[in-house]
Image 1: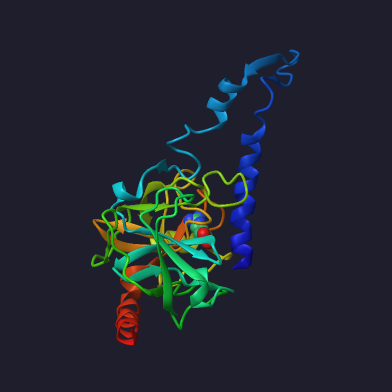
Image 2: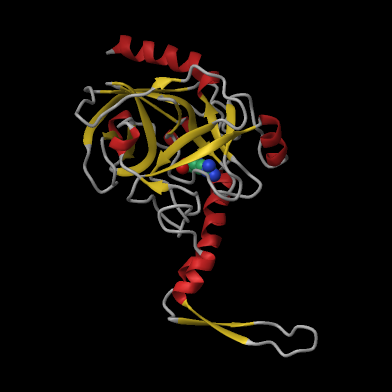
Length: 292
Ligand code: ARG
């Protein structure tokens, strides 16, 4: 899985190479000889070239998303910080309960180091911050294949405010082709490193599990706790979107989990199937609330 994550970052970095050569004003394209005729040199200016290689800035940008605000989405998206650093997205299910991915906790198991920030659109805003009292990862979570990539967090104090919203758990079985909304601060064309400051959202259709399984064979195992979605080659979540919700009609139906590359032509994004893991989520919420 470490390899999968690494692949994601790597694939994205390669794309970014095309994006970066913007210091030059003009670019000369040397075309090869065709049918014995000597090749010609074509001069393009950077803006022309950018139109050719770059998708429009606020639209189909790598993951095909667009900039949005948390309020527009419904205020349910939270940013999860560990030791003050942004790690993952999360979804507010109740005033003091947040849903996210189990893999966000790898090497980050101290509740006292976590902070949940709500109501933010840009990562450099402070948002409404809450400490974390406790969290539960699925016992069936497997790091090697990301099976059951789900976790539930209990906040020390309730997260409330005018721009704060919540989502219900999924109550529908999603058929291939159904479109859902994913959002997060994940990389957009990953010029490489960190999360994006601006919140983005993208609509992606569910991909048949059989096709997803076949695409990932033999690189990764698509288990029954996973559901796939993407517009191959165009729209997808990416690194740092993890833990965030895939939403259908005000219900959280998927949790961003993993993918090989981002917006890959072959590999869809893989999400935790909330319908499948609902018994775990409900049981954990109950256990956390009783502990308070
Ligand atoms: N594992 C990534 C994270 O930690 C999420 C990657 C999702 N990738 C994708 N192509 N849908 O943020």
